[in-house]
Length: 297
Image 1 (spheres, rainbow, N blue to C red):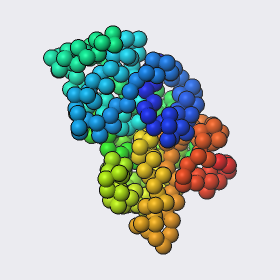
Image 2: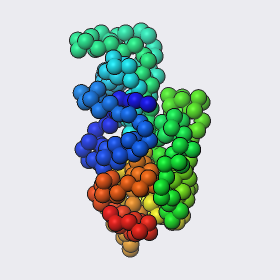
Image 3: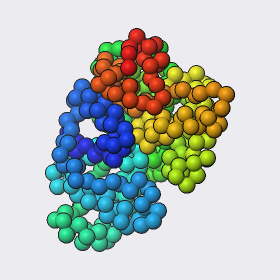
């Protein structure tokens, strides 16, 4: 099982702990990663570029697809935003005439996209390709002490047509399946498929922080010890801006709920050293959560 890894911008910059933990768990899951092919790939546009110039965004993604297609490998993403933007671009690029017009631009670089790419998120690969039973067999430390709230964010759950939910209905509760597979308790809450607030952070910080506060306080209020997300942008907002959100919306007390990247949660159940997964690099401390597992960050 070999994939061209598309790590996205954030996991190689603001959230390097996601990249490190991804490499650790993929080795144990038997997922072989090509780390070379995507080195020259660009940002997906994160949906922001597409609002201004849809064709440019689609051209950048078609270029990425062509790079993977050239070596005959499927693309593995570890970012919900990348997944959603890529899936929507790929859906538009199935139009032969539109794709050919974009290929005229790609030809300057010797690239061509034939429409065969199918980028998939690590979460989906674990549930659909590896299988929950295989994941369970790799668990060496079950996590019954942990009550985990899933946080999907926006881009990995809609639009469902581009994300092929009709073909893969298991994607609707994939996070819950993984949480249960590692022996932790699922804490359900209504905000799990809502926006984290990151897209509006620079234009409406007040509302963005309110969204962070609402999601984290809601999950904590329902008894969660931590939240887990498959999106580094959601992690940036829910972890990085949680202290500010608490001051603005819950001034009497900090919220203090750790936000885990998906591979970190899985890695804990596999017995991987928290330091290797950089769980000590989070803004909201994971120390209390890890102490419940008799671990140190």
